[in-house]
Image 1 (cartoon, one colour):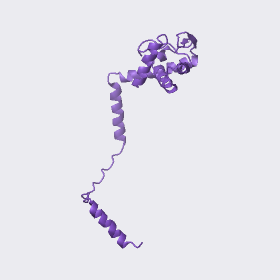
Image 2 (tube, one colour):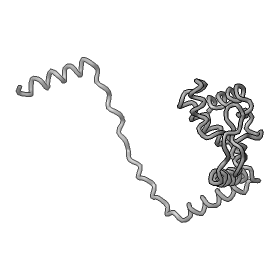
Image 3 (tube, helix red, strand yellow):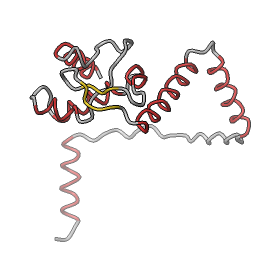
Image 4 (spheres, one colour):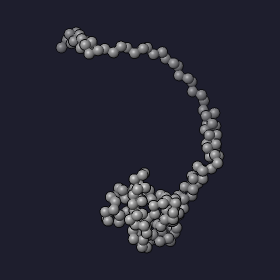
Length: 162
């Protein structure tokens, strides 16, 4: 994950009109296929471009920037299309999930308390498992040395008709 942060910072330094290093600052929607542009310029290889852009585009501020009709930008910061309504709707659903998840984690403990209560209820519903019978183990046998192993092998050869 640190690699993705470093690559985003590198992209923001090289293309400041397109990328933002700080995930809490406003973002601009990226041109569809911008990953191919990065590969064609030799900035990133295909795998790194895909992983870095996935990381960048999953940021909350980037998702918030995807509003129907918003201008998408290319590597030079020029207009390169618009955000489609379907993309904007999907982004809104993702933002709602992200915000709900963040609110649950940042709550004043109710989330944790509710989760503990649910787990306690489930534990009551389950019947108790019987305690496994404790078996008495014999002490481990003493290991044979090399000379004893060789003698046992010779004895087997003598007794086994061949």
